[in-house]
Image (cartoon, rainbow, N blue to C red; front, side, top):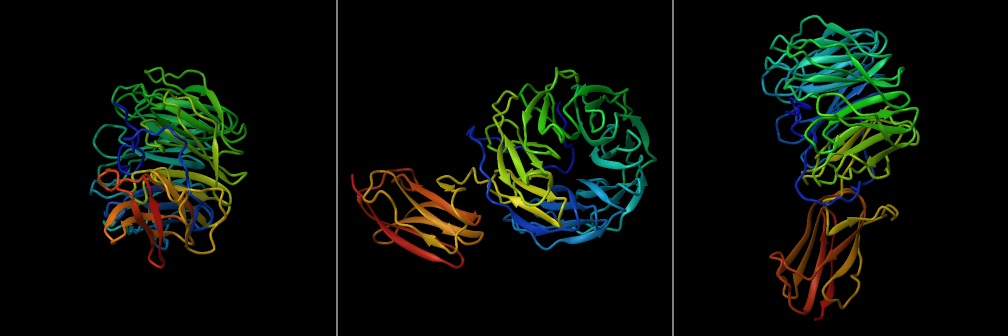
Length: 471
């Protein structure tokens, strides 16, 4: 059985129901202030209200920011909690078994990991620290010893190993046990790679241009590493079933070769030679999620230069279409995908290491018959255009412009004011959209010839126009 993120990832990836197969479309980013140099982001429900909140590791400010979701993908002001010296990776999981998501953050200059327990409402107790190896770069939580609680693994760049810290069952941890990896391991991911029911490790080694696979012996100890070639300076590794055969493959972001390596699993935790796909300039991390809801896992890859997130859509067999890039602000470094606004499509949260910002890129793929126009300039106000063609039979289109993110209602009424069709009701990002009506009502029945009204309503704007259906 494939085990990816084991605890605290109800919001992680799988939004696979309807088939589209098209490249997902993302809106321009919304920015929120976190701390200095936000290097790592993680999304999960910290306050128990059913939506995904945001945790951010701020390397320059030695803290972790929590930004709570208001329920619609808009986030409250960050609340900061002290970690150690230079936290560079954060992971959330229920570490103490009380049903809420706690935090683990590794501190680069302290050679330790900070544990911040959730008080149950999305606020956190003071950090408790546990020693790791030298130069910790990445942390991941999973049940390695099969005792029902979440243990920790940490990739240590300077000491060239991974630390395993077993959980005592209450969110405290026994002293680390270290296992050799490659040269300067900077990312670790835990998943059942050999399909034996326990959680193995994949480690990206920046200085040796490879990935180490360490198989679990079944009790939380690990066999010696086996290395597989990746690209130049691999920065991040992610395990997911990319080719739909039921086992976990590997995606690796390679900073210096400007690409992503895909290593397909043979079914036993060994891997075929890497196949590479271009992915921006200096890709820093990789995240796999079903971004277009067609049942397979696509890739999101932030690249520090230029400032963009590359989307690589899965062809359904673990091969990928050419990248499509979206602007993402200054020095995007880490990315996490989850449905933030409740439309069942995975949005993106991005940490910008060269600033104090995180950005949110909303996935617009599920908003048909309302389609975002990425080529249009940012509107200077709210507007509703005249439909075209007019008269029409049976299809017509019109444009709406939103000055800012808004709760928008787009509805059709007959001439006496009875509602015929709701085309959209929900949050939309600022921008210009093309709206299509196919001449059908909410029951999907064709409507009669006549004069109809179409209306755009937001919290601060309302306008209606007439159109004529002639059959």
